[in-house]
Length: 529
Image (cartoon, rainbow, N blue to C red):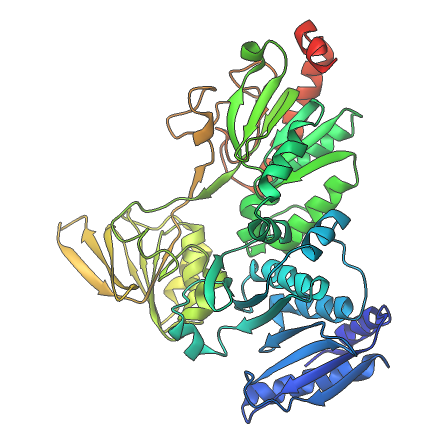
């Protein structure tokens, strides 16, 4: 299961174990059980603090295994074989059950420990899902810190009967005490905040007491991260408030065009960006959604950002880098069947449609790449493109056309997503040449039609384009003095990671230039005093 290099690295990690752990395995006669047996038998000899035995309880899922701290009731369970994106979850679980400290803040650890009540969590994941490990690792850690919390991570591809019974059509899917509880990527802080009813009010109070920033960045994607780094390097008070650090990049699988990095994946890049930002004196405020901008001209002092939790942050200058999100079709059935057959992440949810018929809507690079990936998993892919021809790179189109289980429909306008029994059963499209309507029987629809900027909260306060993008000039300046913008939320063309990074850097440098050329208003000085 493990090659020599990975085994050597894993053995080095196992030297960090502080307490003995035991792997308790539940097998059956399947090939996957044999693979699990091979994996655990390779891990067990890596440390004298690791033991291995067979599960005696006949009622547990098979194949599965627990990692238990010997002599305690601390442990986590994996139902399946945590390889692929979940291999890191396995390594962290081994270390943390074995007493190696987490990198979570002491404040969050104390908050987890104080949670009251009995919580039995189950997380359904897929090995190709780049968002699932965040949820799996967070709930694993919580179950290690607080004995009232239990967690099982379940590979949906191996337990299809459960997936069908629970009508799971998107991952990660989290159940608490047998009931649906959460869907999609969630950070440790988000999960804890959802369980702790008083977390929002306490956080809002703490944020509102923060002193004004010289540069406050709104958004934590490539543009926001680079803006924060460039501002902090100037030695000025810098803060970054993000609804989700990493933004859309967190949902990106393969990245092959970031100069000097031949290949990486979205979550890895996000982790590297966050670590880079933390190298500087930047106040990072995650899980904070901006809802209102009040310009300094109206406050008589600082620019003010009002957050969804009721808090307010103030700054002499702002860099708006709120990014973009997947564009929706806006047709009947899309919202009704979201996560019930309508999906936006083929890497995350594709394995749940193994052997089934699906559609991909969109003939750009994202749509064609999604269709190529899905063709290797599902039974059949129908790609629908609104225009007369696909817009994807020719090399991608050539690959797509070579696949035998793919049908390409151009001049096809999707008009409705249909369903029955709470699940997608097809879609209707209009042939734009003939005007005829057609229905395609399907079990999944993957929407890949581009992005829409996250700027609704700025309407009426700053100049936006007809497409909702923040209007900026060559210096990243907006229509409000002292407010700058960068990245996918702006009018700058070509929405690419490398461009967003450059634009974020430029916006921060422009903000610094603004600060040294403008004195702090007397009203603002009096307000701080």
